[in-house]
Length: 167
Image (cartoon, rainbow, N blue to C red; front, top):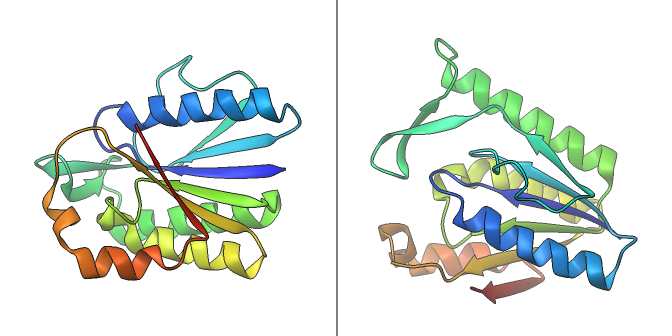
């Protein structure tokens, strides 16, 4: 099995740690599984991901206001539109090349709405390639305003084959 994990840690590494634990369990169950984590936010800290898991780090955004809003390019003088286009092309190229059986998206559609267009395009392309899509909801703490848009979350959640709720 080939697995592509979309991980969007904007601040902190809680979700990266949760994904690392899930991947360790998956490796024990299926040692032949090939895993590529695509990080759309902060890079997971060294040693976080298990051995045998590869990482593709997208060029980054960083929050300019609060923790999750006002995202701006991390690279100075790089227009937002150029960064968005580059990220989209990289994601779609990795997806088409890897041909995953499963794409797991951590914390979306329950959060990370600032990346919705990017993530939705990749998920649609994955579906067109026949990949199954799962969403992960890690119950790590408090609620944010994006969780309050229930209709939007439920609409986006319909595009997934399964939803994994974990701690």
